[in-house]
Length: 138
Image (cartoon, rainbow, N blue to C red):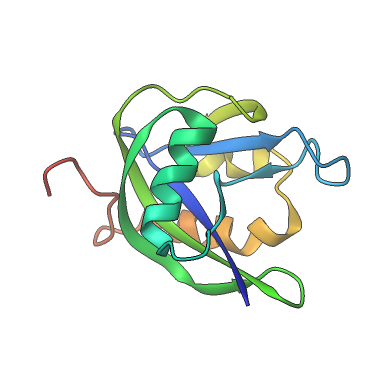
């Protein structure tokens, strides 16, 4: 089973960072949570930190998981965590565009089908009082 990790990066205003795919052609233009494949011998959190450094140029702190294993085809799963940026400003290095979305704006972009149930889960988490993205030093 292949594991793909994603970060629901939340800023201090409660907005979530969405990333628009540049490729492959069949996914280009769709929106997703930043992240990528876990390399052999790498744990999920290390992969997520590495992917956000490579794709966005930021250092993140990984928080609580968003659900469990989300299916991605027959042989892969997607695991997503809430996260916060602790260093850097996000830039679209491998994506067409980045956009910060408030909970009420999450439907303003066309999410990839695999990300849709996660978007709903993230919106619920952001609306709750007991679940927060990590703050640096927590």
